[in-house]
Image (cartoon, rainbow, N blue to C red; front, side):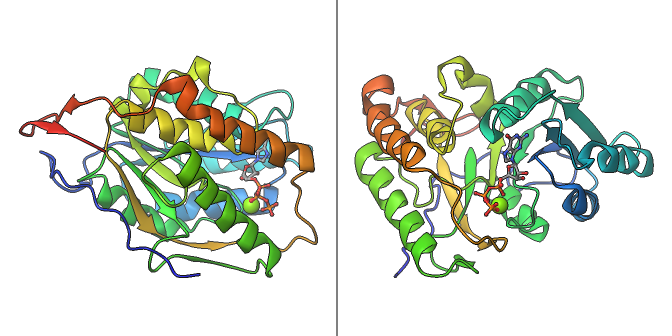
Length: 274
Ligand SMILES: Nc1nc2c(ncn2[C@@H]2O[C@H](COP(=O)(O)OP(=O)(O)OP(=O)(O)O)[C@@H](O)[C@H]2O)c(=O)[nH]1
Ligand SMILES: [Mg+2]
C-alpha cells in the first residue's frame, strides 16, 4: 500500500519548535499492563525534563496500579495514577485524564495520549512534539511515507488501512491515520473540545477528537510512526463494534458540520484553514 507524504501545517507559529521549557503531560491508559508500565514511564520521562506521565488505569486486576505507585516513588512529582474502579474504555479514561490535566495548576502546554504496550514508541514522542511547532494537533501516523506497522499479518493491516480510507471519505478529516491513538495536542485544542458530545466507546473517539479539532479550525498534522502490534491470535473487534464505528464516522459531518471554522492564528498573521 503506497503511502502519501505526511501532511504539513502551513503556518509557522510564534514560539517555534517544542522547547524543553514547555510542560508536557503524557496520558497513558492502561488495562492489565503491569509488565509494560514501569519501563514505559522510564522511557517517556527520559525524553525530556518537562515531561510528566499520568497513567489512567481502570482497576486492572494484574496489579498495574502497584507498578505505577512504585514509579511514583522513583520519580517524585513526575508520575501520577488516575484510578477508576472498573474497566470503562480507553477513550473515556483518556478524556477523564485530559479534563484533569487541563485543570492542573502545572498548566501543561501540551497533552499527549499513547498506548501502554509499546505499540507506540516513546522515542517517537519528540517527533510529535517537534511538529507541534507548526501544528495545533499532531497524529503519529502509520499511513504516511515513512510510517508503517509490524506483526499484523495480512488481514489486520488491510482492515485498518481500509477503515482509515473510509474515514477520510465519509468524514473528510485531512489526516491519513484518524484511528491512531498516539497524538499530541496543544492545550488550546483540548480547551475547545466539547468532551460531553463525544461518543466515548470504540474507535470513533479518536475520530471525533480529531474532527472537533479540525472543525474548530485548528491545524492538524501527522508524523510517520512505526506501530508495533503485540502478538494476538485474533482481533478483539466484534462485528457490532465495526458496524458502530462505520456508522458513527459517517455521522460526524452531520453532527458537527462540514467545514472548518476560520480562526485567527495565535501570534501569526491572518487566518488558518485546515
Ligand atoms: N484505562 C483503560 N485503558 C484501556 C482500556 N482498554 C484498553 N486500554 C489501554 O488502551 C491501550 C490500547 O489498548 P490495546 O488493548 O493495546 O488495544 P489494541 O492495540 O487495539 O489491541 P492489542 O492487539 O491487544 O494491542 C493500552 O494501553 C490498553 O492497556 C480500558 O477499558 N480502560
Ligand atoms: Mg495495543
